[in-house]
Image 1 (cartoon, rainbow, N blue to C red):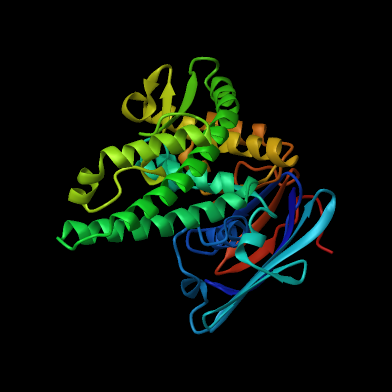
Image 2 (image 1 turned 90 degrees about the horizontal axis):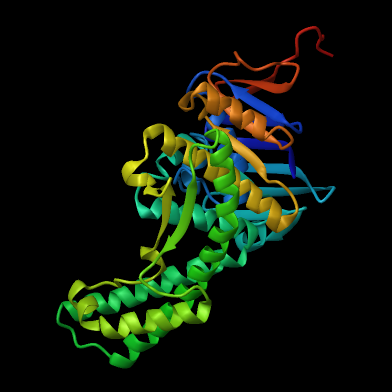
Length: 371
């Protein structure tokens, strides 16, 4: 899969832009706060469905304007395709090859792996960061998973409201609680089964990448950590039902659901020790790099194509060895990265685009003249 073009109008600090990308490495460079990350945010929005920076659509509109429009053209399965997203005064419209689609119909068409400085805390950060990593990666390969997560959150909210009311002394309907518990167990089991299958596919790729990156010195292992036992959907569902049944009074006292997919985690070890507790900062960064590159490998295994790799200002966070590894290991895949300077990149091998105040300028390689 290759991104061909990105167009944007009134998006953050971008008045209007049309960027062209090539297979291989593409570099967006310029000083901070000029629009590099905004461009990557545009691109990744078509893979994730929303801003990865936690911004609502209204926050993406250029100051003084009433809406924005962004679009991409890309090549998948040897066919050129388009996606477009428009937001105007609270109204949203998504287009796939010119035809209106829902969010669920847009996700999974254009696939991308994002690596940004915030992801460097993936190993040492809180469990929700690792759950988010799994959710985003799985949904791109299996769009139906996104609906499962939405359903789960709605069920969890309703069950928690009932438990909270009961905690406050309100009389509760046991049958109603049983109904929400049954539904939560069912969807939680489906989500956990997806995550376990994904980790099984991710693990060998991530382990091989870290072994290669460390020169054979470090061994990475991944596991899914949950209160529920089992690996199949039915085993996990049965385990959740038992947990909820045996701990009803605890949950009522707490006023919330103490078990479920929203509390699970991914165990990451390096050489048999917890990476979160014992790995050095360098080992943790190597493990995160291996996980993000492995995400791309699983995507290729699942879909038959590599995703587009987006690296937002991470080169300055990595040492020379890791920077070289990134460029070497993604050599036959499309990479779009941002940096403050163009130094260190060969303009004959890299598509270089300068960025200043929301304006993007393609740089002409040395020895060539502009048309």
